[in-house]
Amino acid sequence: MPTPSVKCLRDAIISSLRKQGYSVSNGVVRLPRDASKDDYRTLNQMAVRKKIEKSGPGVRRYEDKFLVKYIANGWEVEPKEITPKLVLVQPDSEHELLFRYACLHWSIPVSAGYGRRLRFLVVDESNGKLIGLFGLGDPVFAMGARDRWIGWDKEAKADRLYHVMDAYALGAVPPYSFLLGGKLVAMLVCSNEVRKAFRRKYQGHKTLIREQTRPPYLVLVTTTSALGRSSIYNRLRVNGQRYWVSLGFTQGSGEFHFANGVYDLMRYYVEAYCEPTAKHQAWGDGFRNRREVVRKCLSSLGLSADLIYHGIRRELFAAPLGRETLRFLRGEVQRPCFYDWPLSRLFEIFADRWLLGRAERMPQYREYSREQYRLWPRRG
Image (cartoon, rainbow, N blue to C red; front, side, top):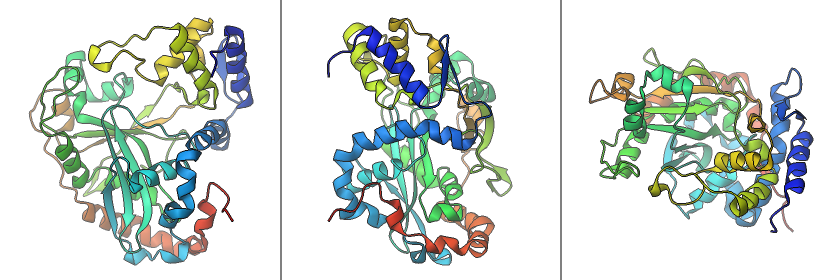
């Protein structure tokens, strides 16, 4: 792809934002007035379509072969027989393709996560079908609401951010989503099994920047809602302990609104004309992430840095995994005193409080056909 000219790229960026429904004036991006969740979904549609288009060559041929077969028909789901199991996704596997395929159905484009990654499928052992998934990656370093809630100073954060992961993808697929399966997935993120998987993977590893070996404790998971305020994380408690805490809302910045094709042009331009500003040689000599690419590009083109604010403020949540999580992260104690939350117990709580009642009140889930889940028309 040839490197675009300054004028062509400036025009493409402004045109792309307006096609998504934004108004752009004096370098400021504005959402439609009184925007609803449906408006937010519409704003994301171009980026989601682009993601599907780019993923097609690597995923489409497997949809008929096996991917759609992991999706249950409604009549195949018997609520009293559901038996969730966590499957750790391995690179270059059938499960990795399934993870990518399911993420293409999200209402917002799902990133691949940053740095360290742990990806899980939640599978129903009673029928072999997919309930949902979640992916954990490195958290962003600067997140004011999280840092104020923890009570971090600069040194403590630099030393202990290692023990935090961010759920960059989290949700259920139909028909389990009709049975509040998203709540189940949110609960299982906090299970003993996830902490143990983190420990097994990072036991004895040295950190990239400080080259230190730390106790492989996963003590806090954060996540942000997809579209403003979220109900998935409401009223999730174990033995009276609330474990997804709302910390407020993000500022509404990011790069998803450039992910509809124009980002590729921005990246080509930046690689040709801009210098990366990685702060440590261990990161390599390229650009750190997509956000740095966008910022560099906007600055070089003479466009306002405010264009990075898409305006969709997402609710930020945190799940402490131990009684002493906050004190541990501040460096005041050496052990987080983990909660004992086995997957089996978390599912019992979910089934008693939400699943069985929902299935009785809303039996329409049985009418769901996995053919509705297809991204591409059936061939032949």
